[in-house]
Image 1 (cartoon, helix red, strand yellow):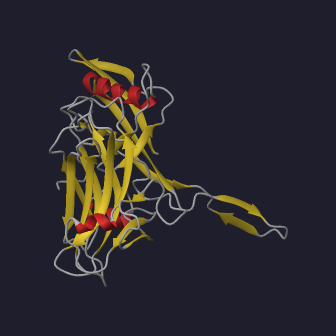
Image 2 (tube, helix red, strand yellow):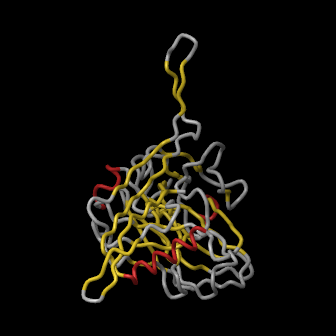
Length: 314
């Protein structure tokens, strides 16, 4: 895919699947995810580190796995069709993968976004293979959302790529859509002013024991959240209007349900994304208490606006 460092950021609404970076994992499987087949084949385990600071999902299977046998090792998540999604909406699927791991057979890592019932419909199937390092992948829907379907499903699975015992890693999955049924995402008209900020924060508790020794622990089990700050100076009104629509729908204003966002910040070089442990996108909310843009003047009749948007990973 074309992922250009320093390119114009992109913003979209997120299909509300949960735990798509596998940060929450206290039991046998990551929270919100279940086996497609019970009992499932192969193994689904934590892999540290992932594309980012927390873990990734590792799926392995035994023998030579062909499609549709890969359904037996699949993890999936199913949600009700959100009533605020319009019929005919196009979508985009995003994910990060490694499909060739040392000591395991070459794999095809497959992520699919589909409907469930009635008459299941595949929106996006994104297979990825031949990757020994983290690969950022994106796929556009071939079919538009059909709101007569009752549920939506997201799944991860592996099959063989010419070798037995395949294994692959999955991380940073997101499914998104735009403001209109023909829009998958919005591309910013202007880039943020330098320097935009992107930084992680963790959740640490600390105290002292009875002998005064400091004791620290992580009550979340390893969760790391990212915050991205975008300062803008003298941007056009059309861009402000677009960002205002995202702000209002994200906050659940105008008598609507709050919708999470997907921000593609474009602040990392693809070749350095794993070394930096920065996710290429975050599923997030805008945390500004008020819409931040203020009128900052005009030039040759154009009205210009300035302000700083702050996005925080959910």
